[in-house]
Amino acid sequence: MMMARIVVALAAGLCAASAARADVIYMPGAGQCLTVAPRNGQIRDWSPIVLAPCTGGPTQQFTWTGKNYQYVDNTRLCIGWHKFRDNEPYPLGLEFCYQDRTFVRPDGNGRVYGASSPEAASRCWVQTPPHANLTSTVGLGPCGNGQFRAGTLQQAMAGKTTTTTTTTTTRPGQGPNQTPDQPNVVFTRVQNVGQWVIQKAYLNNKFDRCRAELGRDDNMLLIVKWASRKWGLAISNTNLAIGSRHKMEVEMDRASEVFNGVVDSTAAWLFSIIPDQTADGLRSVSRIQVKAPFGTRTWNTPGIAAAIGAVEDCFNANSGNAGNAGKPPSPPPPANEVFTRVATIGQWRIVHVYKGGKFDRCRAELGTGAQQINIVKWAANRNWGLSIPARGLLAGSKHPMEIEMGRASNPVTGTVDPKGTNLTGGLSGDALAYMRSTGTLQVSTPTNAGTFNLTGIGAAVGGVEDCFNTNIGNAG
Image 1 (cartoon, rainbow, N blue to C red):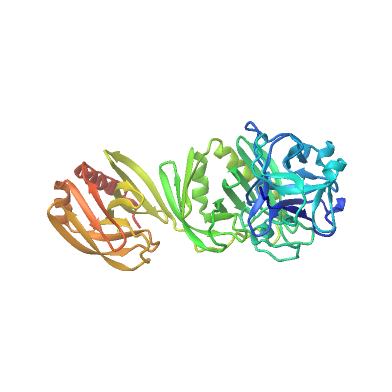
Image 2: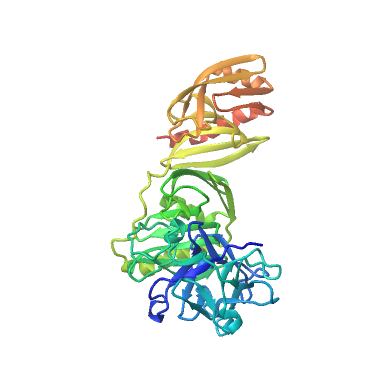
């Protein structure tokens, strides 16, 4: 089988012990990094090395010691090779650093040879198919012309082939510092709190932020506090463009909020600033689910209160060292709408919505995703409405909605909300009364259509009324 030959290119001076630092080791132009995979559920000796999307997470951080690559998360372990048969690339995995199988010899052309024996000295790090014994996808094999590079996460994502001095804009989760002369971020693990990892980040030797990490690599959740005292939430990005903005629907147990997220300059994270009250409310949740354009991700969050407390402790211990850094990115202000489910009535979910701390509306939800309708009563004018996902219609635009209830038809003009989430049309008292007596509802818009079984709608509308009466005293 023809295998891509990939070798590690090291920048001038990398071999000097004085330049020791944390790097990612990546495949230029592919966004793939050497990553430590668990063995029997643990990171330890003989854990395989695989190629995975670059995130700059703990399992992708290595330090060049002058003779081997040391795993930052456990400095007793280094990248080494393991021999199973003579006629195959020897898979790479973690090994204790004193083992000579971890010794490597870079050459002037950027190849990295083994240095433990004449046999290894003629071989280089190369990409391989998954190994049957160790599941590694990188091994020690015949040298070729392909290259890995060691450098910053920004370089890994941009596919740069040389080490250059650049000025970067830092974002939450931007990855480890790579070169002493590069204005970048140095991450240092502070402690573990259950399954959470607490890290502090310094930018140009000034405190920038603390964060709590949950999950691994391409499925990671971050809760961040910057030196500016602002809080943020970030999740691993998948294929969204740097700087692009996207909705993040964050469900926290029974409450939910919608934020305007932005992809950071490394393309590793989709993140948003969050209000202080939201960060405080996270302490009591057992589950966080985030809906983004690339899909829905869910984390169980035992110990989250202790983790956020540890971020606060980290912040308090380091904030005196802050410089002009610590300023989070400046996306548009997040939408401060808080959704809280107050009742379940058969197939219907009764939810109240507060905006800017003031009661805004109650609604009865039926269905999920694109096939969800909401029967809404607004605090501003006490009117009723029916909404359905806008599915690509522009925020603020108006469109026809055809609402069929049994044998009756009620065409209305709907308006897309400012976030571009739902298309909402008004419901007259007669239309609402007729809807309560019918069995099915059909809704058609220029981009969406659905048929809904209205079983229990009478009780659901009553639930909205109860919700409204309970909260209207808190309206703005």
